Image (tube, rainbow, N blue to C red):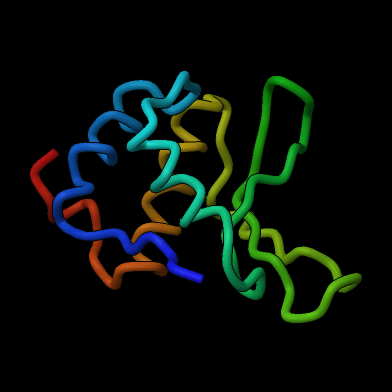
Length: 105
């Protein structure tokens, strides 16, 4: 099975996501999102709802299914778009090894 790999050419889709993290997504961005959302779950960054539609905290999935999600309490959000962009950046770095904070988008 062939799997899409994120390259520097996909920075345009990171810029697209940054502008509109709540969607809709172009086919190119959807391909990137599929890669970032797939794969191994251990350590993957997620959002934990603390108060529906109002407050979220960054979390990381555990190594084993059924174990508790680790909440990173120092990363709390009241803006869903900002929270989603943060998760996108962290997954991008975990997947590619490159920090989007250093890229011109």
